[in-house]
Amino acid sequence: MQAALAELDEDVERAMAWQDLGQYHLLRSDPDNALHAFEEARQLAQVANDQAQLINIWLDIAEVYRAQRNWAETWRCYRNVAESITLEGTALQSGRLNHGEGNIHLHQGSLTLAAASYNKALVFYRQTNDKRRQAIVQMNLGITFAQLNEMRSALDHMELAERLFAEAGDIRGQMLLLNNLSNLLRRLGNLAAARHCGERSIALCELVGNEKGIADSLVNIGIIQRWQGELEQAQRSYAKAEHIYQKFADDRNVAVVREYMALILRDQGQHYGALRHHIQAFRLFCQVNEYNRAAESLNYIGALCRDRGKYSWSLNCHKQANEMYQRMQNQLGMAESQGDIGLTHAFWRNWAAAIQSLAAAEATLVTTDNKYPLAIVRWGLARAYAGQGELDRGKALALQANQAFLELNAQEAEQTERFLQAITNGTQFDINEFLVPLHLAK
Image 1: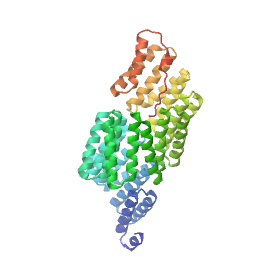
Image 2 (image 1 turned 120 degrees about the horizontal axis):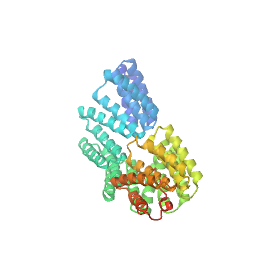
Image 3 (image 1 turned 90 degrees about the vertical axis):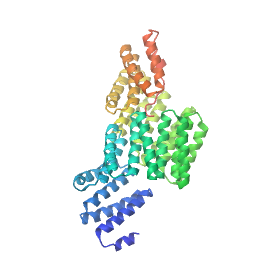
Image 4 (image 1 turned 45 degrees about the horizontal axis):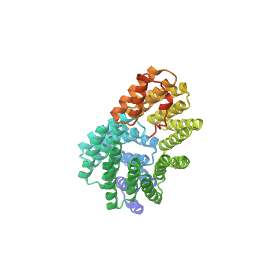
């Protein structure tokens, strides 16, 4: 095909052909060759001074960098698009720009900004009647609202995305949607419906011969099986998924499976086995530049150390995770790791340090609109203040946390209610009853 490209005389035609080749490589998950083809296309379009085509090519290059999770280069591409789009841009190009910006905001934990960008993209996609892209944005809005713990809105967006994918005849989109819908239904506690979505996704994947899609669905089903206490079945699902990922040399998803396997081992009380799997996941995430997930692995390792009473080790892990989140500009991750630092200090009965770290986490979480981690941090602060004898302050924070837990139907509500009853009834209060292992980075 590359030999044929050389035969084309017009720079514009050659640029379009290189762009088509790049999109072919991108669909085949070959980012290196895709990037080479898009760069060839960009240079030719630049020579031809075709600004409209240049915008499209920059958007394609941004997709490659996004697939590689190279966020700095992705932003650079979007800046180049933004400089040109006011003069030459079409509705579709404007939609793709806002869509891409939303993806980065979502990755960085800036959820309100992500939702705003996605809604802007929808306006443009509706102008072009692009149902496939509308479906993708609706699905991403569902993911965003789920992270904001606005579950009704999340479900509405997911259901609309499912209808749009069906209307567009996009089977691959339907497979991805079913996996995300399965995650959402699981969080809502509807495990039967979540499992059904996973099984439907596997059926679609088998229909089109998408092995990696089957693996993704098996991971989702494994999570549900673990929640239902079917630990051996979950291990088998994860093992099948890992075998497929290894076949495709997909180290990122191998790491994801190792992380989930570690959680099963924790459930079974096999702390050293869990630690080994978390460490393996951490190393693999680092190898593929997935530093947000690597930081999450460190938080899991830190929580394991805290559960075993290794508080200095726990603090070291959570501090390293916090530094990684800072480098990735992940505000939510920074707050969660800061909260874990505070919890470790609380378990160590170092109340002043616990309050300092948890208060810093609270200040960040208030700005991210993420209700669940904020409630967790306030619950940690309540215990820390109570631990140093400030029961009234602890009670006020516990009331805030309890209200949020009740709204979110979270299991922590039972513990905060017992805490409030113990203080209100004037019974002999023992803070040790309420210092149980609780890991923020779920």
